[in-house]
Image 1 (cartoon, rainbow, N blue to C red):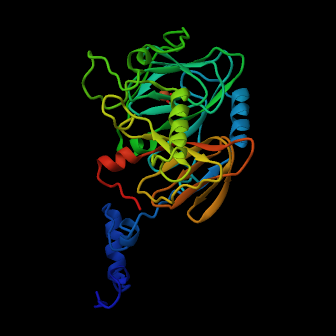
Image 2: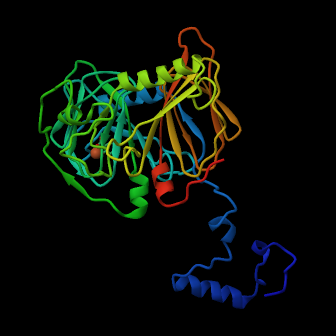
Image 3: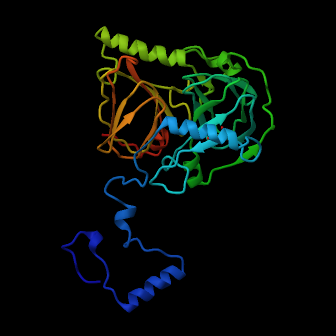
Length: 365
Ligand code: GTQ
Ligand code: FE2
């Protein structure tokens, strides 16, 4: 190799000779791959995600979910009528980011999605509709508008819709992370959900759903939250009070007019699932969030209101139900529109932050 010390290291390449070609051919035949041809790509100076920023339009998603409902049966094998949001930068894979799966799931009136369990962690967030119960380890959990429902890894779960209307909701799972790590196990459960009752509150909520109170029979930390449902009444009240306290002169919001909360595991005070963080944002009409940039990826869905998001320097309109992805190290901020119909922009967010934090890769500016 010639001495090219004056150039940056990644531009130091060997002379193109027949011997070099033979060496590279031997590398290939022996299942080897040299670092020096791809150093800058493998070890960039900062994250350069293959995933790109993208916004999915809720109306279009909803219509295709309905068409899937007409054409595709739900049952054993396919398991779920769930349509994965596929990041345009991660072609061919139904992954919204390298770690996260986001899907819209459709369950028609009277339909039943069979029970199964898998290592992957899951949650559902309900943007609209009523009438579905998800049965988690034999415990029926009502799914209503604004609720966050958890299905931690390896718990059996199936869904049933007892209403006369279909229901469409957002699923979040750590499928891509699990696939990359080869951690997945999967088992079928009963074809019909194991408990067809439809109580207002699940047994786990009756045990765990009291603010800052836990049963003395369960004092150990649990890796996933034992509370299967985070109800909209509580989320809404927490956000409303944060903004009211701000109006009363208290410094409790993230920034002016931006209330935000994190859903937590009551046994640890930490994230609800080992791999996924779930949060909720409320921006007062006209308010703007502080620009953020984090290692790791995030997905947000507009729950109510409208506005726009600036993602990697590009501005996108947002309306109810729209879903967008924030890839690693992409700068982003949201702004609530000034509109009469809705005094707020409400956003549900999930991210892979627990993975990044546990592995010491988390970084923010
Ligand atoms: O509802 O159990 O979107 O297992 C992907 C995999 C939903 C579910 C998804 C699943 C489910
Ligand atoms: Fe599942």
